[in-house]
Length: 267
Image (cartoon, rainbow, N blue to C red; front, side, top):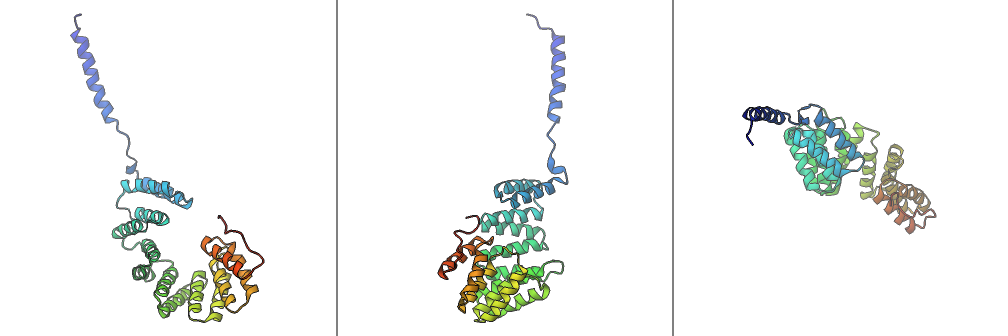
């Protein structure tokens, strides 16, 4: 059969025009949208708040691929790794963010917390001191409380007390500082001062925060005030902090408390 060259030429021309047209219709790159990375960070934060750390990590890594020079991306990535107990990955992320923005005090605080988890006290103190002395950091009392905690773990109770008191000076309603100060007094055999500090903490802390109730109960036990101890242990056992709640139940059995909870919440 003889080919009609005119028809073939027309078809070839049409194909030549069509193929480049298809190639030019590329999928839009969402990273070009200035709001896209912010939306991804917000979505990762929402997953994080729900405890869905896998999807949080997937989302924040997508944000990283769009904007690898965004310090906030590495802050969130570090928090996610911290919650998954991948502390060295968390340190790497926080340091990447700090390299981009050395004045990001939230990243310095988070890095300090990670060093605390690894009992690297001096490195933790260095990070918290940067935040404590920064003129624009809005919660320096948290930094001083953590500095005090690190010094207390090192056995330097004098420096710990200085920093706890500085935290209270800056925020007289910060319950964590009173809780830690009570623990310090207990280590110094200042049991009456410890009781007063825990009582102050309980007045300021959320009602479901177990730690000051547990520690106050142990101070009452030191004086054989077992009825008062049992009251505080019962409150600690119903708190949101599972390790402290579990310890409270152990001490309730030890003190023969009448109201023994079978298991901490969520267990």
